[in-house]
Amino acid sequence: MTEWIEACGAGDVDEEDVIRFDHEGRVYAIYRSPEDRYFATDGLCTHEQISLADGLVMDDIIECPKHNGRFNYKTGEAKGAPVCVNLRTYPVRVEGGMVFIEV
Amino acid sequence: MSQHYVIVGAGEAGARAAVALREQGFAGDVTLVGGETHLPYERPPLSKEGMLAELFAAKTIATAERLAEAGIAFRGGFAVTRIDRESKRLEGVDGRAIGYDKLLLATGAAPRRLPGVEGARVVYLRTIEDALLLREALVTGRHLAVIGGGFIGLELAASARLRGADVTLIEALPRLLSRGVPEAMARQIEARHVAGGVTLVFGDGIAAIASGPDSAVVTLASGRRIEADLVLVGIGAVPNVALAEAAGLAVENGIAVDRHLATGDADIFAAGDCCSFPLQIYGGRRVRLESWRNAQDQGNLAALNMLGAGEAVSSVPWFWSDQYELTLQIAGLSDEGIRTVRRDLGDGASILFHLANDGRLVAASGLGVGNAVARDIRLAEMLIGKSARPDVAALGDAGVKLKELLAAA
Image (cartoon, one colour):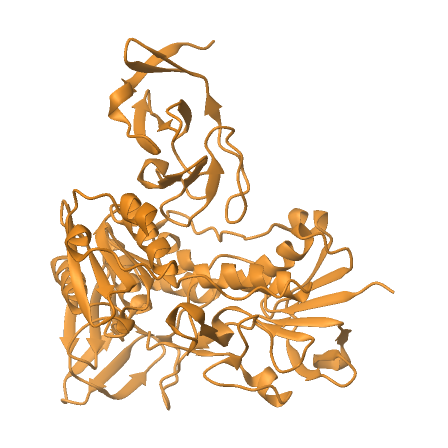
């Protein structure tokens, strides 16, 4: 069963940036794209469990801060070595200035 | 007839090149030759997480299934003894041989040895076996002597302390990390090791090391004696060039390659720790890099160029080290700079930007807890790659986003 949970305020994330969101022992990453849309993925890199929220967002890509593993945060797709396992993504909606994700 | 591309060395550069050949659609035969019997594995964890994890598990770069799926023949435990360039053949022991059409040398580097020092209690770190031996020896109540205040020595000193062992680290120079790390950051790292309980000895050389079956005695130039259960020597690495040299290829602090990673033989390339190459961003200065990222980048690039892409090395050197809760990241080579600008990121994290006399950003060194400096170092790397001349006041002001400086560059 899934549920919608409130992750953060829409203004808490800068454009073309990411923040970390912890919920029930799980780490998520909430993104705001350069075109001002919101996305959510698992918050830890599939290579070595590093928090992606310390990484750099450029266009559609989040880059892991440790070893530069790259993912498309809109689709979760791993973009090549050292990462080969895709990131899980979550549906997002913005309501009343808050960002909700479906987990 | 099908082409056969052979890669000698199954470390980061070699394994990456093998996979990249397939990613680029190469349909011929690919053979990856490893001197070790293990499948390709990541070396960085050996001095870090690998020392600290409850159970040691090597992190493979490519599993047997993945290699098989990609149609990469892995020949582990194959020691190449000679390259016969005339008949394009690699010779191994027992008369074994492998023919090639194109060859990549990714032979890596080996720990620099202390001359005249041998013995069961004197160890180096490069392989899984070395790491397992260290893990077993480094437990509460044991004493580790580390020779050399470089990255391997310091990472192992931190890991040994976290495992409960006592550590004495001996550095011949007056400070740690004198090659490549700014003094202010080396002093911060030094203070962390002192707080962690490491005994540091500076400015003293090694007169002798006597190794018995269970312990060793290090005698310093000053006459001081240090007894230890184990002595780790971490005094740098030397490139594995013997094969290339014997085959008549040029060697210049590593197998000398051009900006396409090609040797003087059109069918032989080299990549990773074993080669020296001209770095375009610094006017073609010839360097050899010992780093994980460089091995990856060059493995990829060598594969492309074996397929005729003719692409030049364009990446900026990048390096990291983990010690205790601290991470150091460096982009570029700081000795290219003549002055520094400091940016404070809060919580003790900071970045030093290194500028050349013409104002070009040539390197950035960052130190902080966890990944506090990662994002800014990555952006600095891109600025360095663009030979940007950012405003000095903006660099020093943490309120100015480096992303904005990059957009303006």
